[in-house]
Length: 149
Image (cartoon, rainbow, N blue to C red; front, side, top):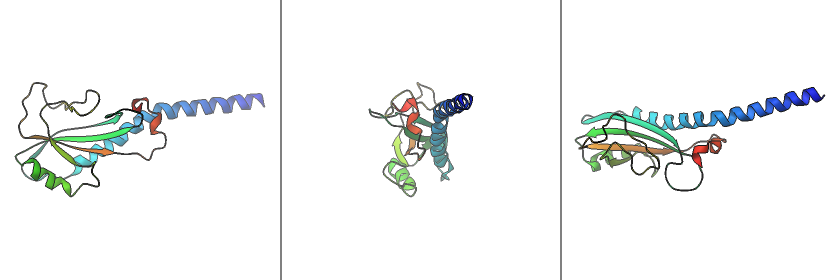
């Protein structure tokens, strides 16, 4: 009886550790999926996809909670208004398919040091835009990820 209890306790501890250790990988995959949806959008002429990235963690603001972010960097001769019009048909809410000018390799509005790797730090950007989306997760253990705190 005592041996069975110890085995069950060990299995429970291992399962709990696996859940906690696997949660960051699952959260990264959720953010990757958000970015993948951005990349799937067929781009019209005059728009060139330069780079893409995704991230999971506490990306803006204070407090606790996971945030999921996907972004693409495009180069386009279209204006910001024209790009907003193009991406408006993909918007599900006010937090999806947001288009803004991009002036450096850094994404300045995020906590941390997220950068587009396809750009040099000192490169002067003209006609570059970031298109980004915030996502969410139904994974009940997402908040076990230390990056959300």
